[in-house]
Length: 118
Image 1 (tube, one colour):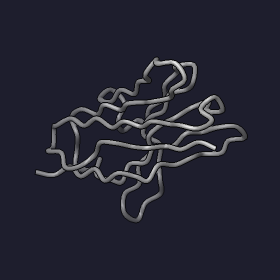
Image 2 (image 1 turned 90 degrees about the vertical axis):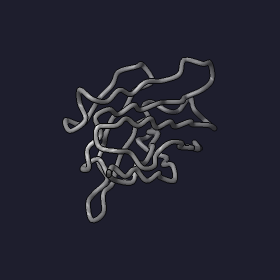
Image 3 (image 1 turned 45 degrees about the vertical axis):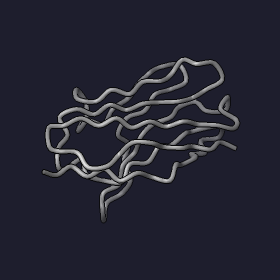
Image 4 (image 1 turned 135 degrees about the horizontal axis):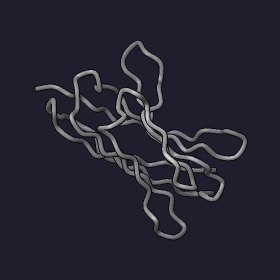
């Protein structure tokens, strides 16, 4: 089992920046990637960015070039951070952290609301 706890989120002005963090606990050695996903009202949950246990990254086209996902290197931890710059109103959504582990099972955090508005 893996537990995921998110932090960050809230109200951001257009053009501003946002930092989201996500810490996994439990059987972290079963995790092969961890990332951030978002879901706007009436839409499906989509990938924003992820990082693998080996450090490879992947970004959605809509955030590429203005977002950076990184991982803490502390031993026996799997904590990731997502920095998003030049935030846009269309970035408004509930953001979820997901840890993908053995057999492709995804463990989700509780979600955090991000609203981009002036």
